Image (cartoon, rainbow, N blue to C red; front, side, top):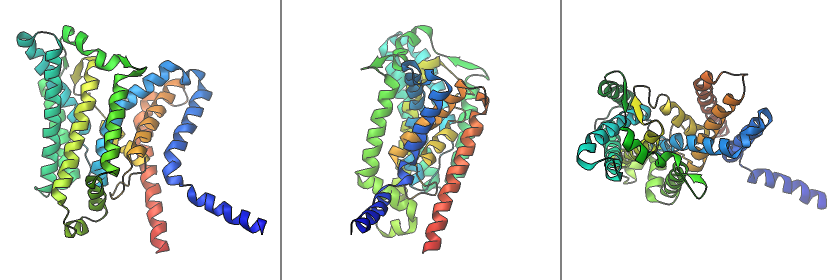
Length: 338
């Protein structure tokens, strides 16, 4: 009797453990152990703070990407979008110096400009995809080229630099801390909480999942598909603008290389976190872990000479391929079971 009870308890424990959900957390833990073994300085306060701060940019963008991908879309333009927003922000703030001086007002004008541009860019991507009936891949591939070209044009092939005095006022947005955590990390936390609530506790999140699962069925269920899908791109645009706001004071400049591969990192973070690339299932919590995993991998590469840090993009690309392959493996098993 006791043996039977014990044997039946084991499968129930295993059933309660979801490897797909816990996988990203386990992977992050393993990476932290590897990082510590390679160099104990990996777990130093300074390195952890730096790791979290660098995760914030991609993490914020990836939260927006989770909504887009869950609803069955894709956005390849986020890196170029960040670059052009950063460039226009710098131009606007430099121009506002003559009228408003080098104080907080000028910085706020630049931040407001960033939000408007993010909203507008996201809306354009969304409307071209829904109302224009063009594949999201084609739309965002096109806008990626447009945005990258624009920032190169604005910088005349060089670099746009923020006024030195304004940068002194703006600098704390990136470098200052609040209750021991850098401000970019706080922004990441707030965006993550808002994204989680929107995805898991509102009708909008359920609509995104329904559309990604089966768009035709969603239409028959009286869901306003075009509106919801457009809003996902708007959310993505706002997330890019927020990431740009906290990124600009880091270097105080923008060029054609700003935001390169951010789209790859954002998509990788989403897929690593368990969101299905074809849509229909999204995990904000997983996306957060995915962003941390990517940054941790890059951080570990800085601590070792075994693999060049220049191969970080290669590692990210391989991670995306493996993650999607594993997802396809899950679908294959579920189909064969049916």
